[in-house]
Amino acid sequence: MNLTESDPTRDPLFQLNMILWLTQPLPIDASIEPLLYNRGFTVYAISPLLTVPPDVRIVAQEAKVILQDAVCPDVVLSNEINRKYSLIECKASSFSPSSSSAEQARSLFTVSGSRVAEVLGLVPDQVSESLLVFGTRDSERNRFEPSLSSLLSEIKAKRLPAGDFSILGFLLAGDVISITTDDKGAMFFGLQTGINKFAQHESGTDPRPLYFIPYDPDIDQSAQERAFCKRVLFERIHSSIISAVGRANPPVHLTLDSKSMLVDATFGMYGLWQKKESAKHMRCLCRELMDALSLAINTVIPGIIIYVQGQGWKISIQDQDQYEKALDAFASFSCDSLDLSTIPQPTLFDES
Image 1 (spheres, rainbow, N blue to C red):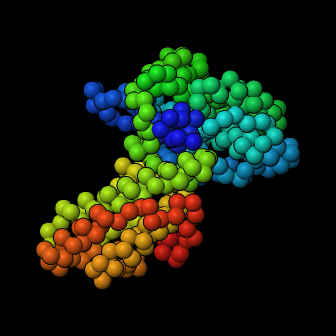
Image 2 (image 1 turned 180 degrees about the horizontal axis):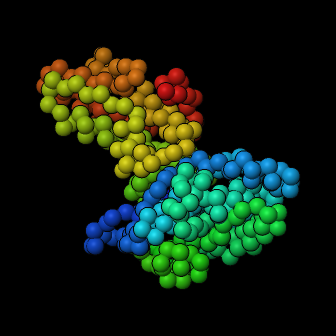
Image 3 (image 1 turned 30 degrees about the vertical axis):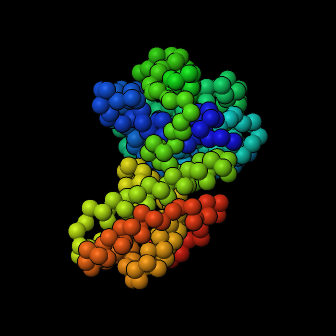
C-alpha cells in the first residue's frame, strides 16, 4: 500500500491526531480551523485507564454482560466552562456485537454515562454532560449505528449505567478534510449537523509527519502503517537530539531523558498520556533508539554518550574539534538501522 496515495481518514491514528489539532489554540490564518477549541474543548487526557466501578462489574457479572475491568479511550476532551466531557475512541471500521471490540464498547458505555465523574476522579458537580464518541471514516458511520444501538439497548435492559453516543466521521473530499456529525454530536460540540470543513490536504502528500502523536501503541493499524509511524517517531527524537547538540557551545554537557525527548517528539502530548503500559512502551522505543544511536556515535568518538541510571543519557563534548565530529556523526546516523517490526522488551530502566 502506498501511504501517500491511500485515504488517511481510514487510519485511527490520523483520526486521533485530527481531534488533537481541532482542540489546539491555532492562529486565525492557520491551515487548520480548530473547530472544537473555538467552542471551548481541550484535551483532558490521552489514553487514560478508566476503571469500571466495582458495583457495576458485579451487576454485569450477575446479568452475564461481558465487560472489561478497565478501558482506555483514545482521548478525553473537556469543556470546563460548560462542564462537558467526551470520551472518544477511534476506529478504522465497524464491529459486530459479538466481537472483542464490542466488549470494549460496552465498557466505554458504562464509564461514560452517569458515573463518568466518579470514573474520571471528579466530583459530580464538575460534570454536567458527557458523551461517548466513536470516530471513524465517514463511509463507516452508517455501519456503526446498528452495532452501537444494539449494545446500548442490551446494557440498558440489564439496568447498567450507560451514556449516550455519537459517531464522528472523517471525510476527505478533493483537497478538503471535514468532520461529519450527527445531531447528538453537533449539539454537544456546538457544530452544525453534517459536514464541518476544517483543513486542506495536498494531494500526493502524507500527513503523518505532522501528527502530534506520530505513533501510538494502542491504535489498531496495519503492520506497514505501524512501521511507518514508528519511523516518524524515531526521526523526530533523532532531530530533537541533533538540535539540542547543535545549539550548544563546547565544552558541552547535556543530559537527555526519555520523558523530555518523548514530550518534545509529540509536541507536549506525551505529558498527557495516562496509560502506564503505553507510556512504558514509548520509553522502550526511546531506549531502543538511544542504544543504537549511542553505539554509532561512540564508535566515532568513544565515551561521548553514556547512560546514567535515574538520570538518562549524558553527552559530553570537550572541544570544538570533537563538537564538529560529534555533530557530523549525529547527523549521519540513520533510523534505517532500526528494526521497525519488533517490539523491544522492557528493562529495569523502562520500569522506573
